[in-house]
Image (cartoon, rainbow, N blue to C red; front, side, top):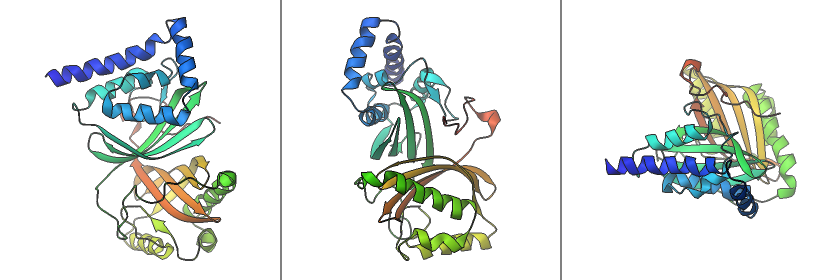
Length: 294
C-alpha cells in the first residue's frame, strides 16, 4: 500500500511540476534558460528514463498546455501521461534506450522496455520552442529470444555516420517501402540491396534478402499476406531512417515502424515493431495513431 501511495504521489508531483510553469513568469524564464542548454535528444532521453526513475525534473521538458498524445491507449495531455504512470505496478518499469536520432523538430528513439510486460518500442517526439508538444509510439512484445539468425530486436550497429547523406538515404528507404512493401514490385528489390547481404532483427525472419523472401513466401502459402497501404512519416539522421506506415498483416490492421540502416546507398540492416491498431471505440484519445503535421 505504501508503494502505491508513493507512486501516485510521484506522478502527481510530475504533473504539478509541469503545470506550475504556466503560472509563474519567473519560473518560465528560468526553465527556458535551463532547457536551452539541453538538446532535444537529451530531453527525450530524460523523459523516457523518468518512466523508470520517477524523476520529476524531465516533466519540465513537456509543454503542459499543448501536449498531444497519439498512443491510443493513453488519455490526451500531460494528465493522461501521469495517469498511465500511476497505473504501473510500483518499481516495475525499466527503460533502456538503445538508439536515438534527431530530424529537425523530431526526435525518435528505439527503446527496450519493461512496461506492463517486456516490450520493444519506437517513440517519436515533436518539439516546439524547446518543449515536447506531441508524441507517437509503436510497441511490440519482446520475447527476448533471438531470431533464426541469432539477432535480437535491438542489437546491431548504433553508430550514426554519413550525416551529409541523410536526405539521399531517406529517399532510398522511402523508395523501397513504396516499391516493394506497398506496390509489391519485386522486379526492383535487388536494386535496394548489396546482393544477398542484409541483417535482419525481426524476431521471425532470418538474415539475407533470400531469408526475407523465403519467409514471405511461406506466409503466403498459409494465406497470410503483409501489405503496406500508406507511408505516414519518414525520419532520418545519417545512415539511419525510420518509416512510419499503415497496413495489414493477415486480417489485422497494423501500424508498422521500420528502422533501416543504409550503407553505400544500399539497405544493410533492419529493425521493426508491428502493432495492431485498436478499434476506434477503444481509443482513449481522438488524435489518431498517425496524424503527423504537414
